[in-house]
Each structure stands twice: as structure tokens, then as C-alpha cells.
Length: 381
Ligand SMILES: CC(C)(COP(=O)(O)OP(=O)(O)OC[C@H]1O[C@@H](n2cnc3c(N)ncnc32)[C@H](O)[C@@H]1OP(=O)(O)O)[C@@H](O)C(=O)NCCC(=O)NCCS
Image (cartoon, rainbow, N blue to C red):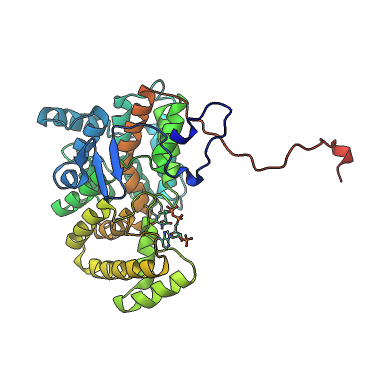
């Protein structure tokens, strides 16, 4: 870490939330929070979201370059071959109570899949095997908890289309595949976000790739990271109509509540991903878009008035909620769908970490009592 590069024994700098601390080097993605720019290995996210598939972006992250047709076909075939659920994992999924959150089901299924099957230094093959299975685990759990049998994936469909097919049993419409694919591309990696950092910390201990990804799923679940999009939907539902928007937002901010889908640790301007998702949401759900857009405009005005100088803008979660609803995905699948995408980034970071590893082990500033005289149990009052 850059601020902890002091000599051993000299006081290190304490940075709340590790903001601005450089915890690793990475060649995967670059987040420019001031300019509102995101690139994967130098490619602008807008170009990738419009023209590439999730599989191409996963190839870019894992192998370091965009694939040609032959390499893409090879990777797609490997994804297809990995789209299976072993019996022990299916049994684990079936044993989960129907009330389980899908994010918890995903974490449990991934952990069960890793039990005994994955050992040794993380590899690209393991990254592919894990990433290919995320939609299967989620869809199997969703179908079982709603009284349906899991479906077999279709080898001719890619990651986005298979995910929608496995959930609904219908071959999805082209615009829905495009919308979800763009989302998966946009969210695949994002610098040293909390879940990626978590994955790298676990990888740095020379643990296995599944343990790193399970830990990352746990970090992504929190509402300050990936767990907010269904809360955006809750907020939009509570607001209900354009006419109700202003009074609802004013009352919420007066109560000290945060507007879900706004603000970001790094972006101090509009999140470039939310710009792309706004356009997709406009196309896939023109009706829902009207309310979402009006609430966004009002929220931005209010944040500027009430939180001057904080530079709070729309983040990626906001239009994701609108887009997901238009694809027919329920709110409890929003964060797991984020994980379907981010698994590519997590695993790419794990591979990067282990290639040039040093145990990640920061310091803590001790704030407890100074040395105390020990009192034996019988003398304590
Ligand atoms: C994303 C988030 C956690 C980033 O937080 P952060 O960089 O740690 O920022 P802080 O929590 O230090 O907040 C800084 C200030 O902005 C305010 N703020 C931040 N996000 C806000 C929001 N969405 N609505 C209202 N106020 C907000 C805080 O109240 C704080 O104000 P204060 O200085 O008067 O106390 C935060 O913006 C947030 O909670 N957003 C809502 C949840 C969300 O959309 N999460 C998805 C993230 S992709």
C-alpha cells in the first residue's frame, strides 16, 4: 500500500475506509473518477458495452487481449462444457429453505462446488469453470424454490441468453439478451472495489480461487457495495408516481436517509456505466423509464442543494434496477446478477494477485486501553 510504504516501526498513515490508498497494481481496469471514465485493459467501456459479448470481455480480462473469432469460439465451447451442476451441489441447493436469499444460495452453491474439487494455485481453467456456473446455480435455486425443476442450458446460447433461458424456460428476446449482455460487460470489473479487494486479500494468503470468490460474494452482498439495486426498486415503488416524487424525496432526505442509486466512493461525476444503462433502460422499459428519469432529476437537484460540495451523482445501481425489471428479473436477483458479471473480474484479479503475490496484511491503529494490571478471576468485582 502506498501510504504504508514507511520503514518498519515508523508510524503508518491511517486512512478511513482506505480511501485513496493504492493496495495493488493491476492491468485489468482503470477507473477515472474525476473524468467519469472506465476502461478494461485500455478499451473504453462504452465501446465494449455496445459491441462485445460478456465472453469476449472475460477473455480480455483473463488472457489479456480481445479474442479473434477462433479464440472466442474456443472460449464459448469451454463455457458450454462447464455448464453442469454436480450432484452434491444440486443436493445442497435443493436442501436450502425457499426463503433463502439468492445471494446466500449462490454463495453456498459456489462453496459446495469448491468442496474437494478445487485445489492448488488458481488457474484460468478454474476461472472459466466458476464463471460459467454462476447462472446455473442461481437459476436452479430460483426454479426449485418456486416449485419448478431446473432446466438444462442450451449450448448454442451465450452467458446472458442462457441465464435468462434457465430462469424463465423461454428463449429470450434479442433486445433482452442485448440489454443483459451489456450489463454483464459493464460490471465485469471496476478497479479495487470492496469485493475485488476481498478476493485479492484471500488469494494473497495462497488460499484457493473458490474461497476468494465466496468471500467476494459476501462483500458484494452489502448495500454499500452491490446490495442496493433492489433498494432502488423499493424506493421507486414507494414513490409510485411522478407527482409524488418531490415530496417523497424531500421527506426522505429530511429524515437523513440516503437516496439509493446515488453517490460513489470514486466517481465524483456521473458513473459512465449508469450513462450506458440509462439508454438501455429507456429502450427496454419506456414506461418505467419516465418515473425513474424524473426521480433521478429531482434527486440530483436535492442532493446538490442539501449536500453541497459532496459531488453526488447517479451510480450504476440506479438504472440497473429499471433495466432488470424490464427483463422480468425479480428484485432479489439484482445483486446476484451483478455477481454473474463480476465473477470474471474477481477471478482475473485472483490470477493477477497470485502471479506476483505478497500477503496483504495492513496495520490497525490500536484505540483500546493502555496496559492494565491483570486481575485474577476471584478478585474481580
Ligand atoms: C456509495 C456510497 C456508500 C459511497 O459512500 P462514501 O464514499 O463512503 O461517502 P460517505 O458515506 O462518506 O458520504 C459522504 C456524504 O455524502 C452523503 N451521501 C452519500 N451518498 C448519499 C446518498 N445516496 N444520498 C444522500 N446523501 C448521500 C453522506 O450523507 C455524506 O454527507 P455528510 O458529509 O453530510 O455526512 C454512498 O454514496 C451511499 O451510501 N449511496 C447509497 C447506496 C448506493 O447507492 N450504493 C450502491 C453503490 S454502487
